[in-house]
Amino acid sequence: MATRRTAAQTPPPTRRPTPPAAAPAVDAVDTRYLETLVGYNARRAALAVIEVFLPRMAVYGVKPVEFSVLSLVTHNPGITSRQLCTTLGLLPPNLVGMISGFEKRALIQRRPHPTDGRAVGLHLTPDGEKLMREAEQAAAALEGEATSGLSPAERKTLMRLLQKVYKPRSSR
Amino acid sequence: MATRRTAAQTPPPTRRPTPPAAAPAVDAVDTRYLETLVGYNARRAALAVIEVFLPRMAVYGVKPVEFSVLSLVTHNPGITSRQLCTTLGLLPPNLVGMISGFEKRALIQRRPHPTDGRAVGLHLTPDGEKLMREAEQAAAALEGEATSGLSPAERKTLMRLLQKVYKPRSSR
DNA sequence: TATTGTTATACTCTATAACTATA
DNA sequence: TATAGTTATAGAGTATAACAATA
Image 1 (cartoon, protein in one colour):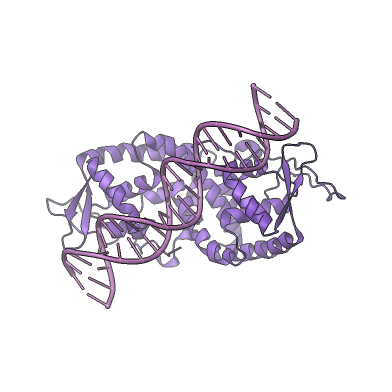
Image 2: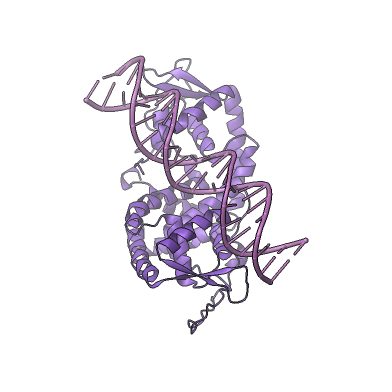
């Protein structure tokens, strides 16, 4: 992924009083309105972290969503595809290929569900456990780097506020 | 966009000590590890807001990125495509069609850049100004709804912390 | 030589419809 | 009848390469 970063912006963006007729040039881009929107800021922050995440996790051959899936299998042995989809907001057809890939790489194993004959329980293999131990450690480390501008208290506050936005009240 | 929401989760997710042989079923999905990651939380929050944003902005015929582009043109008359790309992290080829579409809808007008013969300055038409007045007002309103779980102070804090994540230190 | 804007195109991600096997 | 998983496919979003016009 190519690196594209917001242009530097000086504190008080000089606003000329609107020109007579000719088109003026824009020197520093005024982004103040967009920066009042949670959606805009959250998306920009997510992309910034993912930019760091991508190359570091490529070492383990996993992309962001793949990491999320494997992490849930790690901490929820026997989880089903349906549960993964509901939890992560994915669609079933888009999970099939991912799971197959993990199986071919011998990272996960599919076992019959104990009570539901239609479902399949997902489990990490020993190789999968080893990879995820390393990957989760690497993820925690790079997260620290990506949010190095925040104090531990600020980081904790940020998590709490973000969860207030996307989690339904009943699950908090 | 279909609605997919995280499953309800009870506070202490019972962790069984790894089963002997048979595969156990997962009742409540344990998402505690993922929720320690800023990248995960920011992405989930961004998607939650966008889910509200999409249908409300469809009334004006603009998608999230299109809204961002038009908003920057609104507050930066004469801005160039290149400046839009740098500011929003877009790639030039992907902006061409969008700008053409806005021009065909008579929302923006392209004028020669005052000093650079290669560049084109973008300006809103009266129709574009009218649409963006309404759209920005609607966006502010729906943002309030999407973040109704936050107090004004919390909302302000959230913005500040998110910007600390994605803005380079020099531009803060 | 470098940059703005453009075309063409490829790749990835996400979404929809329809099918099977089981509940 | 409803649900878990799957297949095939369509659409949106994002990426690279190469070009003309201008700096």
